[in-house]
Image (cartoon, rainbow, N blue to C red):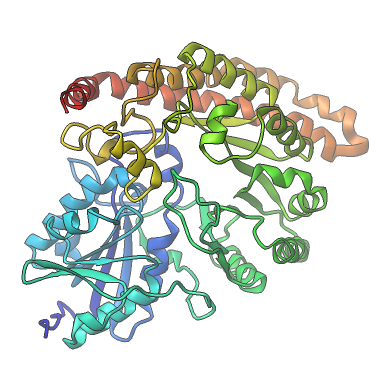
Length: 526
């Protein structure tokens, strides 16, 4: 029977930590305005347990007096002296933050604090690696039910083998308990309690209705049958955030917002009505499939509900790559559908993958110069408002990683560690005739063309042209849309230029080029 937990105060303290990014990157700007939803759900469940208090420390958002460490992230020695945690939970949802997660695990383990971790990174061989790197317990899969059962078992000294969905070491061997069935009924979960996120200044509130995704893309870790909460419960979460935190801007984290069309339509109608009742316009950004452009009734309902931005995974404008990703669509069709979103007034954020590896025997070859030309043409023709162009990432547990590993193409982790798994670095030998330098320089070329300094001058022009709205007094809504979109895009593209410039400066000072050289040599020697 495991030893019982010891309290440092009248109640148990559970601290969830969202590890900081390894360095400044293209996500840093948005990260200090929001937080991760999964860890917040876990902390909210624990905070409802009898005898427990919970808090969340998001190392990427410490804008309200957050104690910072000189080495980066939060000062956990200060936190542990100020409010000692009895148990710490570490969020492993982003692979690039895993080295920092292990640093935190070592710190808390050294203080005698039990360490629990969970997230998409922990699959396959990563389970044992984590347990031998100061992680006491891994939560496998969704964490809300598991964390409650695990903490109650620890507090009561019960046999952990009865807790479903965890992994731990016993006698030096890895024990993986019976898998927990994914939740279908979310009604018992508490609302995500954003007051638990200490030191964070949240302007963009993450919310979610649907879990899982049935698309089964080989490069993605999100799997499983989609499951959802009711539209009523989802709207009630939004009401709570608006009325408690004066929230206005929301990001729906669902991979497929339009899943369960009838229910989503009903939600949009309810959301539209709520905003009319309170006399306030809210702003939502969602992730959605491109082919929903064919459903004009649905798009109109989304617009009426206050959904202004859509994030669309175009992936690639190259037909052969789309086939390799199991995307049954042609580039010209994608352009036409993207323009429909544009016509409906949505701000379109395009997500792309450059240099996706073909499956063996495809015979496809294309130079980096031609690929860049096609990307730039597509982005311009599709009228995409903002873009992110990333390199393929062979995440742990994905079919893509397994395929590339069999082909001996993945760079050794001893040379290029997990901290580089954020889509900004080449992580495997690309298809011929491409080289790692080619694909890395190509993404910088595409992004550098899109986000430029010249948009600062465009901003000035849009400000000067603002009085022209007087010509639209008969339809001020149309006039505002015609003015706002180019102004907003110029602002975003100039801001993107500053972010991209900062990232490039840090990259040029980094040791990555040398690490890449060593990794390629090791691949060739195998």
